Amino acid sequence: MVRSVVPLILRRMRPPLLVLITAYAVAVVGLTLMPGQDDQGAPWRMDFFHAFYVITYTAPTIGFGEIPYEFSGAQRLWVTISIYITVLAWLYAVGTIISLIQDPAFRSAVKRGRLRRAVRQMSEPFYLVCGYGDTGALLVRALTERRRRVVVVDHAQDAIESLELRDLGVDVPGFRMNAEIPENLTTAGLDHRWCAGVVAVMDDDHANLKVAVASKLQSPSTTVIARAGSSETAANMASFGTDAVVDAYSGFAERLILAIRSPDMHRIQDWLTGIPATELPDRPQPPEGPWLICGFGRLGRAVYHALRRHGVRAVIVDDAPKSNGCPPDAIRGKGTEAHTLRRAGIESAAGLLAATADDADNLSIVITARQLNSSLYIAARENALSNKPLFREADIDLTVEPSYILASRILSRLNAPLLEDFLEQARARDTQWHAALADRIQAIAGGTVPETWTLRISAARCPAVIEALEQGMDVTLAGLTHHPRDRHTALDCIPLLLLREDESVLLPSPETTLASGDRILFCGTNTALGAMRTPLRHINNLRYMLTGESRGDGLVWRYLARRSAR
Image (cartoon, rainbow, N blue to C red; front, side):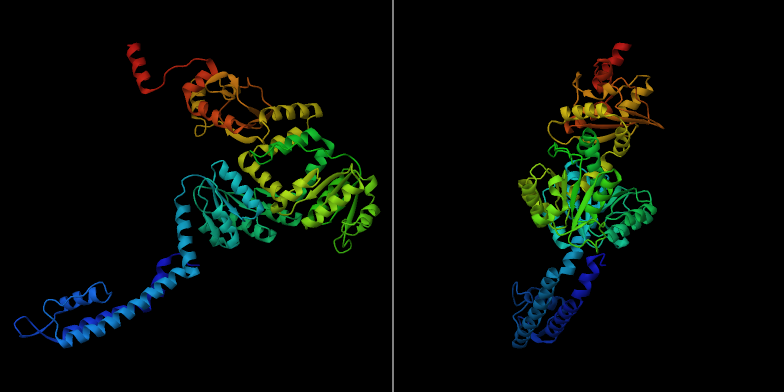
C-alpha cells in the first residue's frame, strides 16, 4: 500500500525530469560554444550564466531577447534548435504530470493521505465504522446527528461516494480499503488515542469476525461491536472478547415473543432502543395463536425456534424445505400462491411472517395473505431500505428492517451502556409497572423516539456536582432533572436506572441523593439532555437548583464579596 505520494511522484517523474535536464544542459552548453561578436565587432562567446539565463526564458516560450549583444547567425541557429529541443522536453514533462494527476492510484494515494491527516488531527472521541451499507449509513447518520465523530472504512467505491455526497453536518473521513486487513484498520485510526470503539457491520460474517479479532488483538481496551448472522460466528466473536455481538434476526425473534407475551414491555423496549428523533412507533400488537412463516432463512429460522420455545405453533412455507433444513410438516412453495397458503392453514392462523430474501416475493405474500384472511396480523421482512415506500403503502402491521434493528441496537449500546441492564431488570416487573412506565415515556417523548444517555458522577463529566459534594451539599436527582432557569419546571426526562457499586435502583425517585461514582441511565428529549448539562458544570446554577439560592459567581462578584467581608 502506498503510504506517501512523494515516492510515487519521483518514480513517475524521473524520466521526464532527466529528459528536461538533459535538454537544458545541451542547449546551455551549445550556446556557450557558438561564436558571436560584441558591440565593437570583436569575437565574443557567451558565458554559462548568460547562456542559462537566455535558455531559461526562451525554452518555456515566455519571452525572447538577444543579450548582452545581438546574436550571430550561429547563435541564432542554435537558439532555434534549442527551442525545439526544450519545448518537446517540456511537453513530455507536462504530459507526464497530467497523466499522473489522472492516474487512479495517484489520486487514491493523495486522497488517502488527506484522510490519514484528518484522522491524526482528531481531538475528540470517534468511532470506526467498518461497512457503509444500509446499517452503516443509518448508524453514521444517527451518530453524526449527536455530533459524534465517525471514520468509515468500506471496500466499495459506490459506498464511499455515497458517504461523500451525504450532508451529515460534520466531516466524516471515508477510506476505500479492505477492513479485513489489520494494517488498514491502523491507517483508519484504530491505534489513535481518541478511538472510542470499532463497529463491524459488513454483510460478510467472516469479514466482521476478522475485524473484531484484529481490533481486539491490536487494541484490547477499545470497545468492539460486531454484527453476526449465525450463532457459530457469534460464539467465535465472543471467544475473542468482542464487547457486543449483535444479530438482527434473533433480536427480532425475541422482540416478537416479548410483544406477544408483554405488549407494554415491548413498547418500552421498542422506544428506548429505536433511533432517536424518528417517529415514535405505535404498532398493533401481535396476537397469540398459530403463525405461518414463509421462508426458512436466518430470520424465519430464528422466529420459528423462538415461537416453538414459548409454545406457539408455527408452520413453515419454503420452496426448498429439505435443502433448507425445514421441519417435517413444512409446506413446499413460496407463499405467493393462494393454494400454498391455504394448505398451510392461513384461514385459522393468527399471524404471518414473510421472511424471504426477496422484497418482491415478500410483498406478493403480504397481498395474497391479506386477501385470504383480512384479520391476519402480518409481518414482512424489508431487505433493502430503498423499498421502504413500497412497504409503507402495503397493508403490513410490522415491517422487519434488519438494518434498522442492527443500527438501533448498536446505537443504544454506544449511547447508553446501562440500557441492557435496565431492560433485563424491567422485564421481571409486572404488567402494571410496564403500562405505567410506557405511559410516562409516551408523555415526555413528544411523538418521537426519545434519547437515552448515561451520566456518570465524576470530576471530568460533572465537576459542579463533585464540588458540591465536597462542600457537604446533598445533591439529589431533582437538582439535575429540572430546568436550570426555573427549578420548579421539570425537564422532559426520566431517570430509568441508578447504579452504585453493586446496587441498582429502577426508576429512582427525585429525592435520591447522588454520590461520586454513581451511574444514571436517562431517557428524554434532546432539549432535556442539553439543559441538563448546565448544572453539571456550573456550581452556582446547581446551587440554585438545589436550594433556590442564586448568587453571583463571576470575577466581579467574587471581588465585591471579598470587599464586603472585610
